Length: 351
Image 1: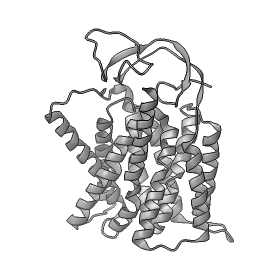
Image 2 (image 1 turned 45 degrees about the horizontal axis):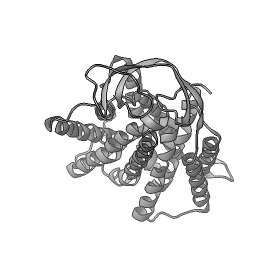
Image 3 (image 1 turned 90 degrees about the horizontal axis):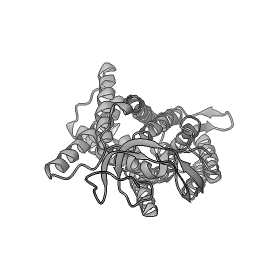
Image 4 (image 1 turned 45 degrees about the vertical axis):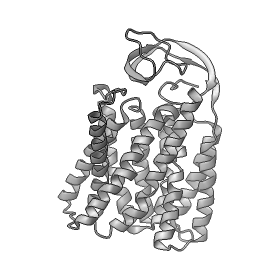
């Protein structure tokens, strides 16, 4: 049961990556008619509107609510998540105006590095040998893509903005992980409207407007798929995999973006880019094949989230017992055992 859930989580992380991978090349096309600040706002608003619509459809069909709702406990992480989600796409859109779409797509893998380092040092998430190797390869590749001229060692301004976006998303991924046991659809709606409205205010203050309704509608639709559905699957995957490993599987996104960029823009491929891409592929491989198994102790904890009683970590009893998945506040008793696991919200133990 645990293994099947982890396989599903891997699939969800890869699906999230595939959906996000289309964002950079298509966004670069839309940036011809939509300014960067407004574009960032439309992407998140599209995510929020689309997921709210899906939530209303789900409720209208009378489906039982199995997910735990966000509470005041998550408020600090919610605020941080929204602020970081306002900044990140703005940096990315600015970067896309001054660098190639393929370069920006590949650089998005630096998000794995920032997510992993922040997860390790701030949130105490365990990182194994293979993930460290992956981080090294991806960092080396990111440096190569960021340097415009090695002879004069000048940095590409566009690449720097993309890296700033990755740093913001690295912090944001870890904040989202702290809420990953809550309703993913609600998280996306909050992220979408909170970040979208915030970015929209900045766009109006900086007088960034667009009048082409067709482009605006396409940007909203792109936001629903590349941000809304992508974030939904990403948050769901984080429950089982933790922040660092979900980002590792997410590494497929830049390669999808690169492929689309090369098809759409017929961009010239330099030797520098080829070497960087090989390093990035090696990094993505080592991140994906990391394994983690040892004896560990689950400390007593009380919280609420969607769960069932057949996966080895939820042995509590309660009135009105329900078979299958359900949500209620429950207590985990202290237990010690050995099994292959990831640093999800039930495996945040020390090593």
